[in-house]
Length: 132
Image (cartoon, rainbow, N blue to C red; front, side, top):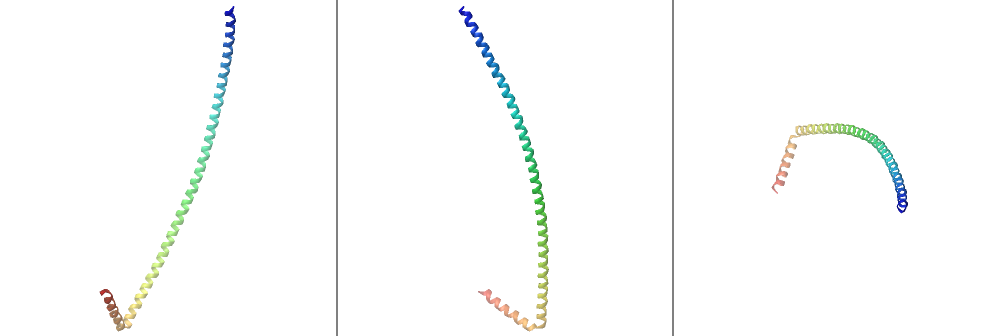
């Protein structure tokens, strides 16, 4: 009799433990399903976020490319303008040099003795300076 009392109690305990184990397994299965759905949602959010970043990067790249082309065109225009200005200055200097040469030749032709005297005086001054 004593044996029968304990055996029915152990069956009840075993059944209770099996029920609790079954409940725990069901909770674990539910948690796994929730984790899988969260992982799927995170993957979807990450994918859409990455595509948004890609779109923004393409837009920035296009803007930078446009700005670079604009700067290049502006630099080319500025260089052309500077070359033209340099050519104008050079032409003006050449004209002045030619005019000064003509004036000097005319002065030598019109006043040969005065020119010779000025050249001699300049030679003496230069020689005196170089001796020191």
